[in-house]
Image 1 (cartoon, each protein chain N blue to C red):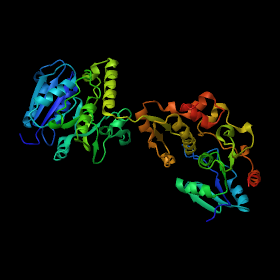
Image 2 (image 1 turned 30 degrees about the vertical axis):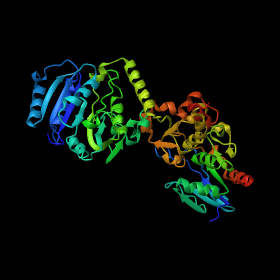
Image 3 (image 1 turned 90 degrees about the horizontal axis):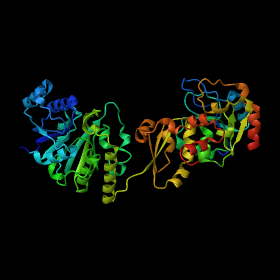
Image 4 (image 1 turned 90 degrees about the vertical axis):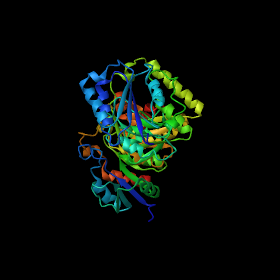
Amino acid sequence: MDYSNSIILSLFARVTPEGKPCAKNYPFAEELVRELNKKYHTIQIGVKGEPILNAAETKFDLSLPELIELSRAARTFVAVDNFYPHFMNHYFPEKRGLVLFSQSDPKIFGYKQNVNLLKDRRFLRVGEEQFSFWTGTICRANAHVSYKKVAEELERIL
Amino acid sequence: MTPKDVTVEISTKNRYDILHLCLMSIANQTVSPKEVLIYDDGECKDLREEYIYKNVFHCLENKGINWKVLEGAKKGQIWNHQAALTDSQTEWLYRIDDDNILEANVLEKLLKHTDDPKVGAVGGSVIHPDCLFNEEVTSTTIRDVHFKYAAQFAPFKGTKEVEHMYSTFLIRKSAAKHGYPLYLSKIAHHEETIFTHEMFRAGWKLIVDGEAITYHFRAPSGGIRSESDLALWDSDENKLKEKLKEWGINTNDYFFMLNMHGLGDHYVMKGILPELRQKYPNKRFLIGATYPAVFFDEQDVEVMTPMSLLQLSRKPPLDYDVYELGYKLAWEGKIEDLFRKIYGLL
């Protein structure tokens, strides 16, 4: 399959040690996927147990070599501040993606080759709390950019 | 004497509180040794007056095992091990530490490997019940002697050929003609390494049977623990280094890294490996990782569990923790620079 026009989506971070959803998860993931599906071939990556978002394709539990090949073939990606932007920075630093921040700081955890979307710095965890565990941090939907804004920024990248 | 008769030799110093456990484990072997030689480097008490020992000696006798308590040279255990090479009447000599307790079938398992005429020494796994080691922290090669534990430190299935031995093992006397390194201090740190590696260099096979289990209780007093002069350890360490140089052996030099955080953090750490390789061109990288698969495509990196890495590095986990450091510094820079700080690149 030709993935050269595909958008990889990684919109959930690892669950907390208590098994709760991480506050970094994108709260408008379903709406975003619906919006992106209108124009792009979307591929949701992740692990079994994550919510399935009705992307054009769902690829869970890929091996690392498989993920490398898929990422090489795809056009770009949209991810939250999870492992994927770090993975892409390591293997494909030339690829520009869209990273959705909310309470973690793109100045610390972001990469300059990506578009790091942050709604407002006032939503960031304060100071040294950037390095605390995510246990107990509540997902604040109003701290995330809207799905329409994400779609607009993606269009700008492409 | 039949070919497979074995003499046990034990050098002991003021460990009367545990020596009897060792002796009973010898008495309980499924295959009995012919004789037990006990070299007493301590008070030289007449143990026949102690009711526990009186019974222990009777147990040995009832199993047809001769025993002798000899006054040790009082110059350190190594002189007693050397004396045992001539005092014993059998070709096979089994050296056992006074704080070793053998499972019942150890000697039987070790003897199974002695049919091969090329075998110079056979040992089993030596387990510390209060500190279990994983096989991944051990090594069969002497090149790892400064950073990894000998193969006997962890149990495993089957057997391994090794380049040096530790603690307790069965010796073929004709493979030991070079004798012990008597130039070491009275604590004789690394004496087994030097003694057995000389056997290896002479062409003898050294075998470890991972399923022959001895427990090493590491008595906190008596024996070499009576010596508090750290200079003795340093002196022996230097003698080992001289010996390695004489043998033309370059030991492996390891750089330790640890990551107990998320998958993304592993990729950030992986990203600084090229810079570390440049800074430390002669080092091998040992990484303790919760996501070991991240390093699948790094050729010169050895990956293990975080616990194993901490056993080898002997540093606390917080020394490697970027999040702990970031929190302490209220860090506002890039996460990859925090990794650089932890590992000496910044």
